[in-house]
Image (cartoon, rainbow, N blue to C red; front, side):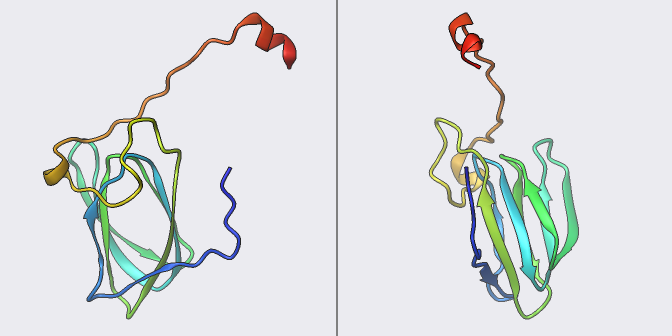
Length: 120
């Protein structure tokens, strides 16, 4: 369980934007101040841009390239990671050209045995 008390945002400016990158896990951004133009390349290669601003929440799926160019003096973002799957890179920024792969997450369903079902 993740609990964030009084989260402190990262500060980005037009001179220091968020470069295009990806993660091996889902990531959620809470926009805590300012505005920006977000860019993303979905896992099927579809490119899109849209505006983000204070109060917005953006959930970026694993493997989706994303970044943002602030359009105000500063853009304040508090990002937090989803579940880190086994075999993932450590959380950080990774680049498709350098890594040479795109992560795809899937669910593995492990059947419960009778003993565990009776404990509920």
